[in-house]
Length: 239
Image 1 (cartoon, rainbow, N blue to C red):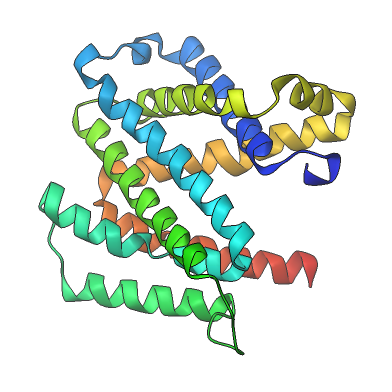
Image 2 (cartoon, rainbow, N blue to C red; image 1 turned 60 degrees about the vertical axis):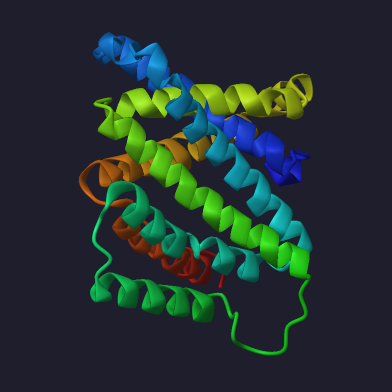
């Protein structure tokens, strides 16, 4: 999509919009009651959407200021923030095994992206923004978990998160240009649908199921697999 002239915000808008449409169609077909929420809980869903968009914006900004591997490693610090939030907000236990797993996971992630190899020059502000993205990811997991704890199903929370995040992104995405570009070629349209459905909606649904059954610290530690799988996929498909 970037080769078609679409920027990072536009690509994120496409992903979010496709997810929102897919979830809406699924709920209309199978569970219309899932649209119902209590007005007093709207602020939690709004925070879940805000933290998601905020994390995405900070991560993209970090990538423009420091190299991509370092930005990815800094995003992975979200597990430490998540463990702290999990203890402070949800009173989940902080076990030595959980802390050790987080340390090992981050170290492996850092080696996978080459963070410890060679001399590196980096911008301090870029590092701070990357850490902010990690904090944003942890806060998003916490607000998502809070929404689930209020008795809402995963599809309900997903619907409102993507509804609100899409509404936040569209004004900054040059909608007319984005729509024209996506509709200009079949390949771009198919890629947009694949990115939205296969690489965003499905993983995010599985992520929400994990949050429903596990504490956010454990889920964040398991998310280290994302970087590991990305490294393997890059080796297999791109050499």
